[in-house]
Length: 184
Image (cartoon, rainbow, N blue to C red; front, side):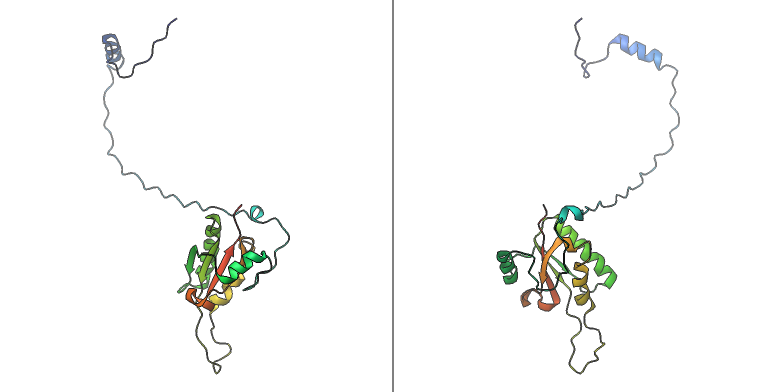
């Protein structure tokens, strides 16, 4: 038995036209409701996840302190200390509330890690300047104190090798120069 290829571009035969006319002969067009505008679909942004067990599987990580370079090899420590790593992303926290800054720092570090960035900068600001005569309990830069604590949280610590204050041209003591772990 020989099979013919189906040609979708051919004109239907008179036999096909007659069959269709008989088949659809009693069909009447119904009144169609007016077309409703399509509802806009809101698609939430899918945030990539950091799986901490895939990031670091070594010994328990100690607390990071500003300028501490004990957990990285000598050559990398020297490069980091000299500021040889180019800043690949920056987060400026000026004007942020504590809650908003906490979320922003977490998201920033995770996204930078997932984007395989190696060195990032977070500008915390220095807080208000004080003289020796000022009240000891006066505000001295909440975010400047909090961000290093946040970098040590369970979600962020495995992503970070070290941090320090950068050179004055990058913000000095009002910023943190952060070296991220490589994404494997």
